[in-house]
Length: 377
Image 1 (cartoon, helix red, strand yellow):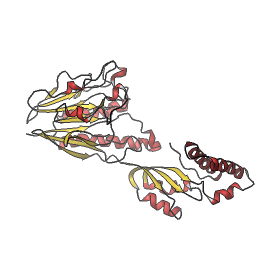
Image 2 (image 1 turned 30 degrees about the horizontal axis):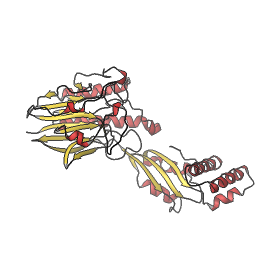
Image 3 (image 1 turned 90 degrees about the vertical axis):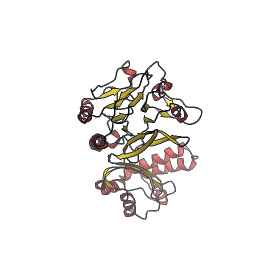
Image 4 (image 1 turned 120 degrees about the vertical axis):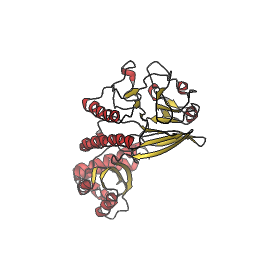
């Protein structure tokens, strides 16, 4: 007697994908494709419900395109007879709406109160599915204990958009709902569908699976590395089996690569191209001791066609460059400026001042020598 639910979270419909520059529109297409695959997985796996654990939208006022995309997706789920459930997260929370949700659909149930007075019943072919959920409401403390398992026969599953914490101290805004794994285990639910963290991660307590973060279906920014998945949770006689479902929303890389051992530009190109792919969005932070500045424009131009989007960040260190000392001796404006910065750099202690001077030196050389790399912080 198995109950099957598809757990996803953090769709962030309406997100700008600004980190991806001119590729932002393509990232929005990736996102829609990933969400359409969620609907397809839900149908193919014959799930009893789709659970979206918060941040369905990127704001409390989703734009028209975001609303239309949502309508298409929930229309498709409704056509397959699959109900959907969600709750406000930290981006589409109810702080600005007095408890009202930011968008509605006939096939979408919101848990938008600070407590769960009674779980929602979903009748399945096998056994009853009871769904619990709550959210942060201004002026109210989220009553986590209200998610405790009731005595109803059937499978009991919760939804929560929360921050899982470790240690004895943590400061969080009311809408982050800080919780510990022990708190979640005491709820005695068969599974807890979590949202907020953008990477997929099962949560265990004392060797038992109690829930998971599903992660966002499409990475919103660099640093959100790893595969994009939803979870199929199959619950049978108190045991939960989790299966990741691939959403194929492009791969985001954010890597620091040491280029100090590269003999020439060809070697650097080979190093970066090893990570290439037509669906790869990459930010490479290039580090290491160099004698001469990187030829940034040339590197970016040679590699651009190998990636969906590419950002190169120059973090190389020229402070020990013999070539740079020669430049400092030039009877030119460049030589005077470089010499002045090198003198300050030589006198600076290790720390933030030294790091800033190194960045200033790179920016100066880029301005004079036309070796600019796109600089992101």
